[in-house]
Image (cartoon, rainbow, N blue to C red; front, side, top):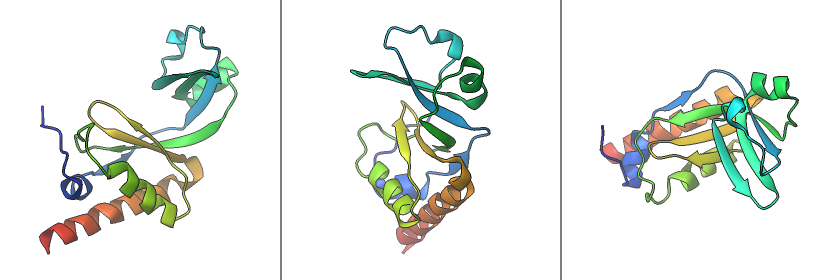
Amino acid sequence: MSQPVSDLAELLASMRPELNEGAYIFTSVQPDMDVSRLAPLATFRESEGLTVIVDELTALREGLPVLFRAAWITLTVHSDLQAVGLTAAVAAALTKADISCNVVAAAFHDHIFVPVERAREALAQLTALQVQAGRDAAA
């Protein structure tokens, strides 16, 4: 297992964004709902309800309300959970292209959710950010 990266320049230069297959739905369910049958990608408990990220087919099958239909991009670099600036840099790059994003940080990687119809463009923006960071590091 690789060591987590905390240096922002190194994170950006080695983030290697990858677009995952499929579409994913952000939805909200009752806080006490058993979501195990949904096989959620992620959950987050808020006072208003339980936010759940599931694949689109599951959401449709279960009749879940669609709050956001997203493509999922994984930054494959092993990012340190205490690293400073990665989320801001990613958000800034996508903001310049007018692409909304929702970021989920997990133990090993950061995951970027963008509108499905903008997935390829978002991937291109993130790849360009990585390339530029690599050039800056080499300079």
